[in-house]
Image 1: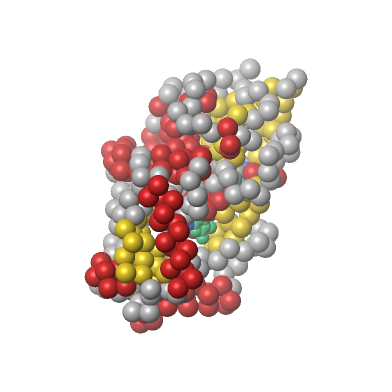
Image 2: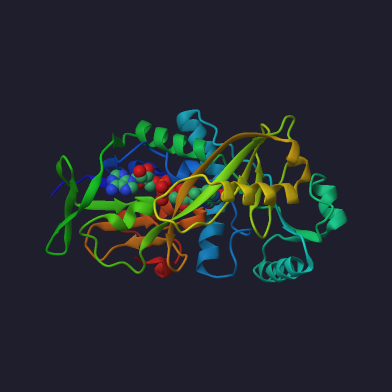
Length: 363
Ligand SMILES: Cc1cc2nc3c(=O)[nH]c(=O)nc-3n(C[C@H](O)[C@H](O)[C@H](O)COP(=O)(O)OP(=O)(O)OC[C@H]3O[C@@H](n4cnc5c(N)ncnc54)[C@H](O)[C@@H]3O)c2cc1C
């Protein structure tokens, strides 16, 4: 039986897992159909929204908080290994309420966060505009989450791939895995168009394509693509500093003046089209929250496929075949969850008790 670990997919999940597994001494082979980090991971806005993105207390919130807390160190570690700065910025997030109904929702959200002991400030319009003068005068107020931050997801994907390679992981790009091979309840390898690659342990990190592999045992939930469009604007000098997170989209300012407006949530299979309707919605949302953006130049647009699950939770843990592991289905929060997922995958492969209870995310 081969001792190497095969990882299917070299997005942030596959590459970050490869980094941690190499550091733990495993032989790692990443099989990537296209280009490492170029799918959903490169499309993301990069919000580390453990508070802005989560709707209630519970296991998912704890997973998000644990991951957010690791990003400052991860950024430093990746810079040391690769010289790539992933653009980790402690910019904070303002959740903007534009009308009384949104104001009530925001207040309700602040309540459970305060009960959990998280940092939240409820700002009225005046205080929110003092903190971020570019915000619209039309808003009611905003919840300020000073601990939610951002990274540049394109750079995160590149840095993780470079780090995995520097640490000795092998990459085969342009290699499509067709399915998992197993014998008597044990993984024996993966089938590719070019033949079988033997492996005693396999990590499924194929993003939105994860459920398409043959030979997988039935899963708690399927993974399916959920498209999201982004428009990137160019503001020079930068117009604002904080992530503005609204009830129908978000606006993410990078330090260099780029501004990302996102995103749609579209259930239309593996179609990555950027559409007139999609852009209309996200541009309208952005200009409503930050009126000054109306003058900004459009730089580029794109869309990506989030790996969505039916119950909204990731698929994380040991599969029902011996030697099969999953790091997929992270839906809207895969950038945020990169750090903790990779650590958990390392713990599982070392057969150590994971540091968090992840039974809720079991495959
Ligand atoms: C518009 C948009 C905005 C987002 N914003 C945020 C955000 O602000 N914050 C956040 O935390 N998350 C965000 N996300 C979500 C985040 O991007 C994803 O959850 C995360 O990137 C998933 O990473 P992954 O490695 O699982 O998937 P991917 O990056 O899609 O990587 C999977 C890889 O597997 C490869 N693959 C698939 N099948 C096979 C196969 N059979 N053989 C070989 N290779 C295969 C693919 O080519 C791909 O490279 C956003 C997503 C989108 C689309």
